[in-house]
Amino acid sequence: MKLLIPSASGLEAVVKRQLDRLGYPDTKANNGRIVVNDCTWQDVATLNLWLRSGERVLISVASFACESFDQLYEGIRGIFWKSYLVRDSRVTVITKTVKSKLFAHNAIQSIGKKAIVDAMTQAFGVTPTETGAETVVEIALYEDVATINLDTTGVGLHKRGYRTLSYSAPLKETTASAMLDLSVWHGDKVFSDVFCGSGTLPIEAALKALNVAPGLNRDFAYQKWAVVPEGTHEETVALARDMKKDRPLQIFASDVSEKAISIAKYHAQKAGVAKYINFAVADAKDFYNGASYGVNISNPPYGERLGDEQQVVEIAKFMGKAYKRLDNWNFYFLTPFQGFERCFGKKADKKRKIYNAGIECSFYSFNGAKPPKDN
Ligand SMILES: C[S@@+](CC[C@H](N)C(=O)[O-])C[C@H]1O[C@@H](n2cnc3c(N)ncnc32)[C@H](O)[C@@H]1O
Image 1 (cartoon, rainbow, N blue to C red):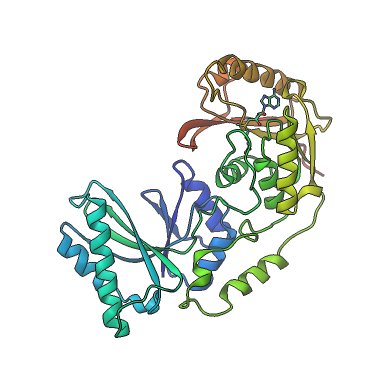
Image 2 (cartoon, rainbow, N blue to C red):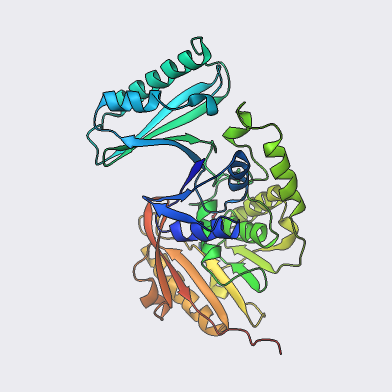
């Protein structure tokens, strides 16, 4: 099977590296989706469970030139649906169309659905009852090529299952995890997030350092599919549970809001990592840590509300001062504030474009000195 991993704009390379580390070195990025060839149901389970920054796992079941509704119908009807559906499968069709002659979503959806129902009627010898598990079929048209994909994930992979309460503009878990991958932090040094809000970054940091599969506390759409060999999910989960590591971690999470910290603690408990994180109510202005080397990764408030601009400027200024006090530390910030470097007082060593909640942001890296190598 060919799998597609949709990835947020700017994070394709991160997702590719995650795939590489999971044992999938030969992938390629195409239109914001990473293509993974020659996969099995086992791989579907592994990738859903382990991918930290991909958005979902799709099975690409066909791809064909498509400039008319006839071509769409024939292309979809010709797919060997018995490999993916059973007689009572409930099919939901969703559509995407970019730079294509077919652009009317409703028509694409209803013709697509009709083609699947006709193919199922012929394959199973009865009209589908649609009383069983749901399979979401995506018809994606891009430059007059139709790609037909099945969504094996269900609710997006950013939903790990631990973040149930909300507090002020939380980061997507997949983005937080990508920010960690783009930093020099690997569980070895001190980690801090002085604007932790609901706890996403410190929790993702702990999950990564402890080698906890991010999908362990949730379900996926494919689990209900009768065509998936029995035990596939359970075996993958059992394997993942065995791969958890226990190790000491120095993770510090703080926020000026008491409410944020109580929510973050609750989420950390749900994620099973509360004992690895030191939480504190504190103003980031006073940030100091006695460790010689460390990494702070944060997404500070970015002026969501009118009149917040001054706060954004102040934060960049006082974090610049904190960076000077902790000169062996690496600091990272995700913010749409374009004057950040100027107010921080230093040009970033690296600046990457990442979208957060649909807003174009920069991920600024300010390097510190490297720790001396042990002799
Ligand atoms: C954009 S939110 C961070 C969201 C967080 N990454 C998450 O995923 O939930 C910014 C946070 O900064 C906090 N904050 C604002 N001013 C602060 C300050 N001076 N010191 C510490 N935290 C502050 C807010 O309470 C808010 O929780």
